[in-house]
Image (cartoon, rainbow, N blue to C red):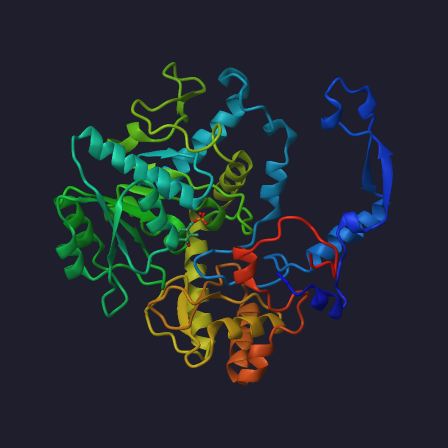
Length: 476
Ligand SMILES: *Cc1c(COP(=O)(O)O)cnc(C)c1O
């Protein structure tokens, strides 16, 4: 069994699929179609539901999920911050929903917004040029590394290595490999930061780029960042900034000023906009001047006449990495969020993100091996299995942290409350950690007991997915 459906029923929360509810045969007039008979049908079985039944179906399903609108969601590295509803209202404006193939002239408002977001992001990151096209942080990484590759190739340089710290997100390794590079993994120093001596030994004529997250994935700021940048640049390499942790720095420090040449922004993390379950998101990429001509196309610029905006293809563009200008509605929400918060609001967000993480960390009884940390901390559950502790936290009514990553912390619980939580809600979160810490092994191993789905066999679900629905009890 892929997941334990019986348990859904056991907890009284099983909700049949629409196709399992009462259905009605509806005539769809296939007889009249000019298409071949084997490609048409005369009728389909459709659920036979009234509006209230339909509303209940989706509401019940939504109640089986955890979301940022139901409670704390301190999933480290993911920055699951509350998404203000005004951004949804802005994105829902029907005037903004135009066909992307329309002429520049007829979508000036849309282009102005996209241009404004390019400018906002460039300013926030200390970059010179931005593309909004990549649809996720990982896609931004891939696009950014392709830009680095195009730059080196244009300079007649044959560099085949990308250096990545062991503590980096898995997508860094994957992006570099997909772009055709050999990955050189850099060990962490004892203090949890980049091992500068190891870096000095690793860089050379083969180095195309170093990919770095700052603060890193256990929340530590790379204090030697200027020296690190110099080391990579002196070897002829480029410095790539993984922007997933930008929430810690908003308005305070800029990757461009630290010496980074390329960065992606996870706008769905840093600038609100809902994410999870694989999307949707956006991973704009910013670069310094020298790299601007390689960015994916199209970008938006002001017309040379000085009035209005136009799309253009950068001269030596690496091409397209997504359709049109990217995930429009996500970009609208990010723009609305930045515009509403303004300079002071962004400063306030990063201040509270760091304060909240540090307050929560001070209340949690688990050991936190590395610090001082910024917007997130990696606690360790020690002798206890971090996954068991996480499952038990579900019973205490909160979403658990990211578990077992980064690997430099054994049984890691990477926790990022973000700026949105109140002191009361941070205290509730701390209580959930501490209650789980006090529970015995047996209780932990049996958790969660109060959720709709209990322990899911994730390995089978990934290795042996069932791609079509079978009714309960029908195992074949
Ligand atoms: C989330 C994350 C990514 C990948 O971003 P996606 O938008 O999920 O593709 C990369 N690096 C770090 C550190 C992250 O937390």
